[in-house]
Length: 419
Image (cartoon, rainbow, N blue to C red; front, side, top):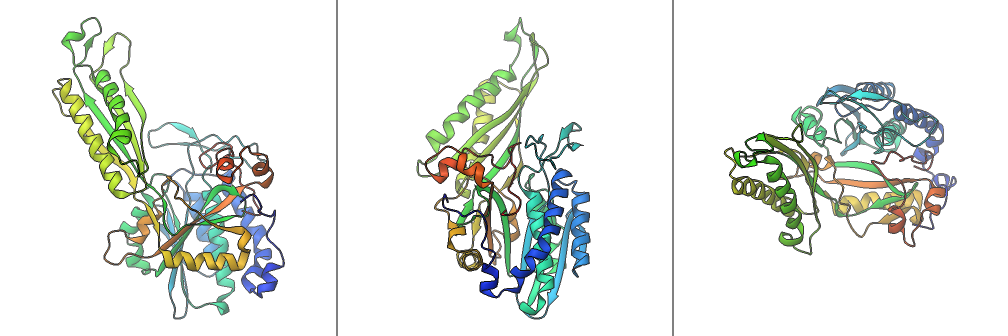
């Protein structure tokens, strides 16, 4: 990783005699302009109306059959070019409720109202603006080079990846029934690696994640008479403490697992014991069986702690967000990686030894659990400016990656051209 050159060799396309890469110089300023516009105008999950309109306009201009409003704000573009496979290209469009602190001249100052009715800052801190710009750029290149390939391109601009429900919403809206079932699905994501570096991994590349809402009920009263109450704050505190032993004592040391209580709320005043307490819990794993084990442990511990305190009412436990592991098809991954090696050179393509514990809903498009799941490939494109990478402390690439602004950071500022 540390030996990555600062720019892709401009002669490489000519050496390969590839018309697609030669057209890139002409198209790139338009794609970059679209990226900057999206970065300045981010939109929260399922509110990507302006972004979706921009995608639809671009695809219409370049000759695609365009469908808007799929699964909410999703956009689908179809380009049929004779007999051949159907390849689906997917990008996500939504941004995060985060205040940008990059100092970029095109930094977002946007604000929006979230699902809970609160006004929040909005920022493209996860690279979805770049994903979307690259999607329409690739779609345009394919339209302009129809003599070079045959088959069907399905372009999918997805809403609601950050809420892990956008892919499922598009599928439930008949994505494959209405527009055809792809033979392979391709997706990419920005990462903290040096800008322009492509990272592949066959098999599991991303982990599973689930989030849970928990509400425990007590019996409130005056703080001077706790004996007349059942204190839900104490129940919640016991749950938090007890959950910390799940990973260390119930999950095999050979497995990766994380269990986090990220939110806890109760009460309104120091001298009032409330009637209820609310928690939100998140889990991460690289194995769907471990995810199920964590969920069972949460259920068991929450109910047991409520019972141990004498709660008269059963707690409520709801999984409100989640996605399984992203498992790349080995043969399709080898094919895509070979193409990247050919176009960009071996110094720009690496193969990851280990998966990331982060989570995506991209895998839903592969129809996990279906008798005939669809093969897919998901890879990372490095976004860290080279001067930032070189200045980051660390003796190894993995140490450096922990010391540069990554996705979901208010300082995440991809280097535009190489990324």
